[in-house]
Structure formats: C-alpha cells, structure tokens
Image (cartoon, rainbow, N blue to C red; front, side):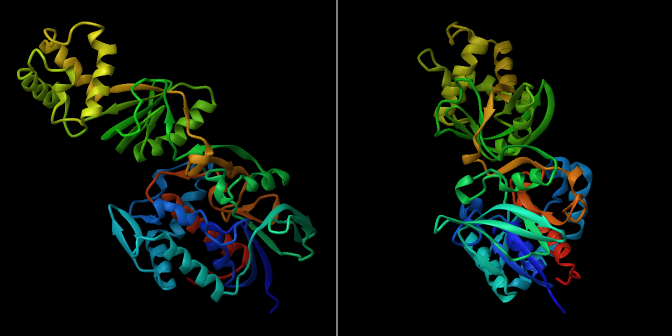
Length: 423
C-alpha cells in the first residue's frame, strides 16, 4: 500500500497531535520555525502545563467554531476521558489540582518530551527552523514554498503532499513563532478569517485606581458591554499599573477585545468581598467605624479586611465617589457606610483596551466556521486542514485551550490521512 504524504505546518500542541494522528496511516513531515517542537507548549501554565480540565469545555469557548457546533462535535469525540487515556497510553503520568490536569512532574517539558517520543516512534520527520512562506495546490497535490531560517535561504520544495494541515497558531506570543501565518494561507485560498485579537491577556483602564503592580486581591468580576451584563469570572485580581490583570480578567479579555474592536463601550464591576453580601459587609463596617479614632486615616476602616495598599486604593476611589473633599471623620453616617459597602461590592471601572499580542496567551478570532467542514478541512480546498489556535475559537484559562489543541489536532490528523481512529 502506498502511504499518503502529509505536511503539518507548525509544531505546537495541535501540530504535534495532528502529526501523531496522521502518522498512523501516512508519511508525515512536520515543519516549524523553531529548533525544537513545542516551544510555546513549554511556557504553558508558567512551565507547569495545565493540559486539561475536569469541566465540560464547550461552555468555556467563544467564536464562530463554537457557535456553529463544530467545536462541540469534536469535543464529543475527544472528551476529557479519551484525552487522558491517550496520554496515559503515551506514558504520561499526571495528577489533578483545583480541577485542572498537570503532568505528575509539574513540568511542561515532561509532556512535550512524551509527544516528541511518540512522533519519533511513528517516524514523523521533523524539519526545524523552516518557515513555510506559501502553499500551492496543483491538481490533487500540494507544494510548499520554504524559507530556511538557519541559512537565510528560500527554496521551492518539490515534494508533493497529498494533504496539508496548518497548525501555525494565532498571533499571541509571537516570540514562540506564532505570527499569524495560518491566516495568510487561509485568505490565499479564499477562506473567511475573523480579525485576530488578543485574548487571555490584561485589560487597560484609565482609572487611577490601577497604579501599583504589587496589589492583589481575591474578587469576583463582571464584564459589561454597552452597559449590558456579558460575563462574569472569579479569582485573583492584579491591580497593575495601567489596568487590571489576573486569571479572572484573562477570562473576560477576549470578549472585551472583540467589543472594543467593534467600537462598543466596556466596563468591569469588581466585587472585592464576594464571600459577604451587602448586609453582612454593612454590619461589619458599622462595628469597625465605632473603633476609628480622630487621628486614624480613612484606610483604617478596612484594617483586617484588605491589605494596606489595597485599602489606600479603595479609599482614594471612595474619595472621588463619596467623600468629595469632605473630612472622613464626622461624616461616617449609617447611610454613608451602607454606600461604602455597596461600592465595595460593585466598584465600576471603564476599560479602554487590552494587552498586546506579545503578552497574550491566545488569540480571539481566526478562520471561521463558514469556511470549514466538521473535520476541519477547507470546504473549497480538498486536502487542506486547519487546527488549533488559528481557528475562530478561544477558551478560558484552565487547560481548555490545550484540550482544543489536542482534540482539533486529532480530528484533522485522522481525517487528512484517512485513518481509522485507533487510539
């Protein structure tokens, strides 16, 4: 039997998984700009690699791929248990922590090494430090235009491929090689691409509250677009200079980026004490107000509740919203204390932008569902597949985006090779 020849462009998480799947029934060549596979994967989760989550992934995604049902169909085929079983068969030991799955070593390198080992077993040919500049289709075969980064030399590869899987990632973390190449390939073949925007990144705010990189707090956050509630998240807020950050902000950033790009207004509402309701907080602040002396600063009202620095920031916000230049002492009526409690539970900040791609973890936007079949092949270009982050699907923090990388890579790899799914 003559085996198909398949080119996989991009050796990230989805590219490696696509190569592994395709190699069950084909000869696979894997091209990447980096000298080793998995350069971006090695940075995942600060190097610890949260590669899966125990929760149903579908509600944690946005984009046309999710809205179309393509994403849910793929996750139905490659759910959490099947991915865990696959990695176990590859020889990876893992453990669960706070709902996320990590390599037992807590090292992304362990998972990356396992994938590299499986690719070697399946005789995937890795071509390092090569940038694919173009894809040309002649009849039923594809040819690649290559640029050899090490030798600064361009060449036309005369190797014909029966299928090509594009797994080049999005535009986030460009230092790892993700520079949006997949979008150019897609547009060259007439596919639709939603504008790529940063996601899983910080937000920018003109509010002077955000003035110190050392302040952190456990909060609940709501995102409002054009004053309509859109989404909520909970976790650690980082009060960075210039705007908020932290996982709870990351999970809202893709939606904010899309809205801001459309010219819509964005704001967040922060609940700085989600474990208490307004009445409980009001009672607590009443008791604390009774102990405040004439010489005590306003921030003393929050002793034992917030850190010293966060207390100062909150007091400065209250000064602008409530005190309005009046002396703090002597005006702490029950009514004002209730207003303070309400504001601490619902403090609003305008959002003016997001972090750049260089400091973002994933990309919002990409190749849209209207251009793709359920197996992630291009509708108008038989044999051309797209996978992973270059598709219009972005998920929350917590291993969801890597689950999409594994599942979409397996889908495209098996479909491109025509293999019967066997693991």
